[in-house]
Length: 388
Figure (cartoon, rainbow, N blue to C red):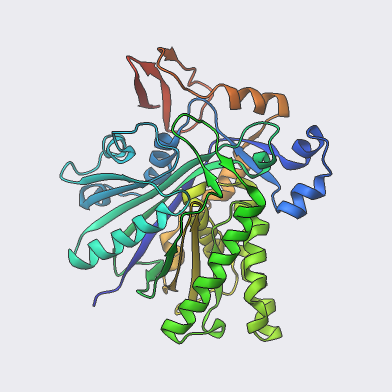
């Protein structure tokens, strides 16, 4: 069978952020609680001129060639921050990105897990349709509300992945192990704009799912921790992934434990500065690992753990390819971080409350948003997406 996997990967987050030390002080907390206890240093902030559609378009646009745009015949949009209960976010991308009109456009939802399901559907589709290319985008805005316990685990961004035969970055193995259970650790009713979460319970469920799937994976495949170079975790906050990794580290030698911890640090460089992006979190972690590890090489096996509250989890492996660096957008995150603007806490709170909502016509000032694709407002209950 021809290998299938991620040929290109790209990321976008808005140009605004808050500093977690300043947020901690504004909330009368010790900064160490956020910086060390949670493992976050900065957090992306969404202006009214960005939403999950514009972020997805901005991410994908940076990696797609003209040939890609004509070859893509399936667009999968994973989000739990959708803008419409009927129309998929994917069909907006088709127009904004100038993609092939003879394409399927679909949106998927299962908390933070849907990006992984979309990726596996893309893998299987390409395997059955030689020559096809599938665009998978995971785009989300994590909102828990101001002055809430979950505020420090907010964030936003979009990860775009192009799935093809003979990929340059990683091949996706067919060793997936998955599990679902009806658990109320996190949910967002249709009438709510902020998520509801039982934080400590959710953290426990996350670790339980990982340990259960890890044991099942080993039993089914016969592999052990010694077969892995590194792991990428869903990171609602980066300390969560570290706790999960520590649960299995005793299975490794002291030398490998140190190596796995070093790879984990590489895998959370970007997430520490972006925050939570729900469906895209684990793939930002993968991008961070690919970009920041100094030891990855062709043939290395990476373990990937995806988790979505409610709850669904999946563990699988991916194999690093010889030209994996060529599938990355060169200097992308470094440029983003260098150009970002830090917001004061009052300014951040203002943006939080100014998100486009409701049905009244509204014109937004797009002049201060440097992104290519922006949300210009609402007319006749239709979002106005433009490129500028």
